[in-house]
Length: 226
Ligand SMILES: [Zn+2]
Image (cartoon, rainbow, N blue to C red; front, top):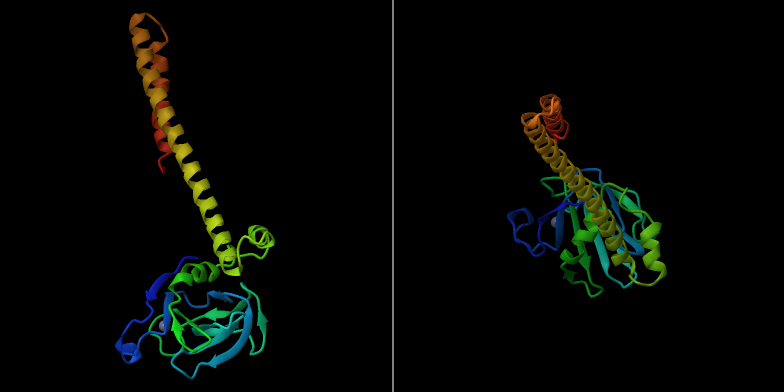
C-alpha cells in the first residue's frame, strides 16, 4: 500500500526536543502488517517504555540496522532470523507519538543514522495489505535470474503489479468510453439519416429515427457512470 511520508529524516521538532529525526515517519493506519525490509537477525526488541514505543531492530546481512518504532504488536523475537518480507508485527501509535505512524530508521554499522528515504516507497509497498506481496511469482522469477537483490525484488514486484492493475483499469475504462462515444454518435447520425430518408419518402423513417433516439438516451443512461 502507499503511505504518506509524514516526517522527514533530520527534521527538527519540539516533539523530539529539537533533536534531529533519526529516521522517517510513514502515516500507516494502526494494526497494519509490517514486514522485514531485508534479510537479517532481530537484534533488539523495544518493549514500549521508551520514546520509540514498541518496536524492534533488525541487523541486516550487511550490518546495517533497520529500526521500526511505535508498533502495537511485535511478533518477532530477539535472535530470530528473518527474510525480506517476513511479518514482524503490527503498526501502531505507541511511545512518543501523536498519530498512528511507523517510525523507520537505518543505522550503519558504525552507529550513524542514514537517511532511509530511498527505501520509503519499498517500505510502504511492503506494509499493510498483504495481497501485493508474495514470495512466489514475479519476485522469485527476478531473484532466480539474479536480476535484483531482495530489496529491489519487492519493489519490482509491487510496481509491476501496480502498473498492471492501472493499465488494465485504464484500458477497460478507455475502451468503454470509446464504445459509448461510438454508440452515441452512431445512434445520433442514424437518427438524422432516418429523418432525411423519411423526407425522401421512406415510410418507416420517423419510426426508426425515434428508436435510435431512444437508444441514444438509453446509452447515455447506461454509461452514466463513466
Ligand atoms: Zn520518527
